[in-house]
Image 1 (cartoon, helix red, strand yellow):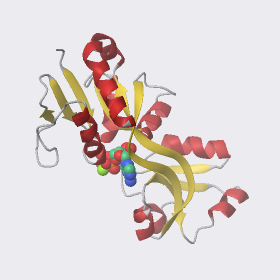
Image 2 (cartoon, helix red, strand yellow; image 1 turned 180 degrees about the vertical axis):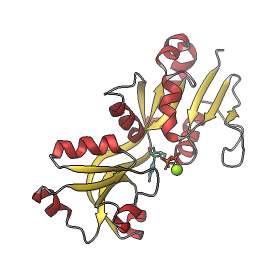
Image 3 (tube, protein in one colour; image 1 turned 90 degrees about the vertical axis):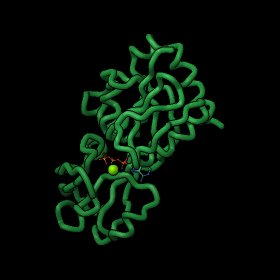
Image 4 (cartoon, helix red, strand yellow; image 1 turned 90 degrees about the horizontal axis):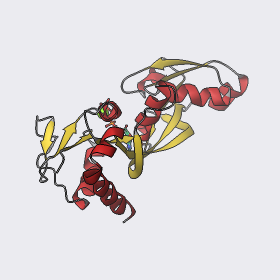
Length: 219
Ligand code: ATP
Ligand code: MG
């Protein structure tokens, strides 16, 4: 059998991909939360998992560092926009895991509707600058984008920004910081991404795996 490398990120995506792997007959033999290994072996000869940062998954798969991977629609969309629309990744399957939404949030005492209506310039802090740029351009709202790498909730609380664009699932983090979700931009879930060349060269191993994932997702 041809060797196969699957790129995953720690946390939600890893945890929620495990049952799908199991359904495909693949058991991961080490826990990335306790192991320091970046390459995890599986019970299947030649199938290995590489643990990478969530935003690095598309890059690994695009350039062949991994044959396939699991990445959020947030990351995929942001990077596709940054690369001018597409990144040449085959995306055969929405795995329906790590579901959340991309939203605009502000302080509870900020009148977002009025600010948008008045045509004032909004200061928006986000990790997703491309998605935010497109969203506000579509609405005809002028924005100054501030790129952050973590804890976006802090930005409106400190006066760094009027609004943030971030992922929301339960809304608990927003509530804990007295922020409100004022607009939903898109629904997010994780997708399977496959390297185009691998799809051709390793078709005999990849196809059954994709099919097994597909049945597990619809089960
Ligand atoms: P890093 O810590 O490396 O900067 P990250 O913080 O973006 O990466 P996570 O927060 O673990 O990584 O998110 C990884 C992926 O999980 C995201 O790209 C998204 O698709 C999904 N995700 C993030 N937050 C949520 C959430 N609240 N609910 C469901 N899925 C989420
Ligand atoms: Mg994280």
